[in-house]
Length: 495
Ligand code: BES
Ligand code: MN
Ligand code: ZN
Image 1 (cartoon, rainbow, N blue to C red):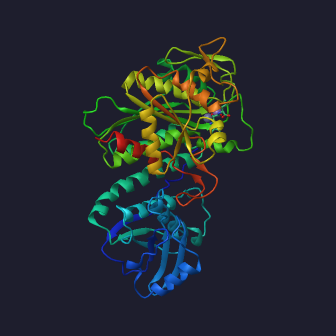
Image 2: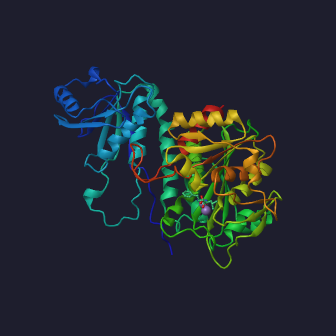
């Protein structure tokens, strides 16, 4: 049965103009912490704005909003935080968008000319786009008042440099939207084939080459670990390979991005408890982030060579499912005793890692995975964990995380942890003890990294889905990883 009902999208277009439009619109003025932007408050509404700001204790904190209706309509002051605040301008735009989305306003004018920072207007608009994304394709009974009204943003008073910078933000927003869409869509729609078909159109259109391996092809290659997970499901697995070479052949060795794409994780025979199992539709968040990053990079024609590999499988219990104590042989030849079928992500990733190293010989690999619940116990929902065999690579990713707003915190690796996954019957087992569960998972992956290859593993289990809204996303899919990867590539591979 065809369940997919349509495409989620950012419903808003962004343009530039010299001055505020004549049509009815809301005006957004970002304000830094502690200083109202005197020089352009001006006009008939200045006194009222000042009263509104002081009357609501507005001090320009990130995401704070003051709103009033002046002679020409709605005016919003949006806090952008201190000049060194992380994503302050984005949060100002996002907080305003959250208020305006269903307000009845159709047009938002952003005037960031009072902010002394490069690309201020685009940043505010970028934040608004991020917060405006929503997924309503399965809601058939919304009343007109419950539907989005905001349709257009116009950035006024911006420099030509700001205008030239905009496309990058727009493509990044589209990449975030794609990742969120993949994570949000239910697992009866985004099964492995559904995932591939959802990303194929938007990526191929931009010149990304898409290749897939099906189950028989992966069996043929000896991917016994990935295929062991897949064998319990009637949904055939896929290895999705995306390739973007913006260097026109100059960079021979690509950067490799590898994603966990478990389209639903029941746990398999080691089945998860019913309560909360529905969350496991987001277990493909690593793969979604990579697809979103390709959307952003190809959209702006980044001068980099990147290959993305997503291991797409569904982890189900069934008569054909693998059993705890099964031994599988990975594509590398190493054998794994499957103690717990719920530790499936590492089984999928290890074969994807081997495949990309054999096929593309990357110098650097970054993998992203919603790999362990233990990561959430360590870092909560504030940072993704990063494990790396190379300090410089770790530092690059940490810096990109901070600059982009997808933060990371470094975690340790070490031989004593590695020993914990030795198996009495095979080369390794797929789980260690309960303690240090995220680290032993990383050690497992590390065993599949060839000597000399720089590798980082990002355990983003707590980051792809939010229980509460923020200035930049509603509750639900966050798109975590897209901004991070785009920034990491831009700062380090964009020759
Ligand atoms: N997909 C889960 C990890 C996860 C759990 C992500 C909760 C986000 C929220 C992963 O496949 C898993 O089940 N891991 C097990 C590993 C254990 C069996 C060693 C876990 O974390 O409990
Ligand atoms: Mn699992
Ligand atoms: Zn999982």
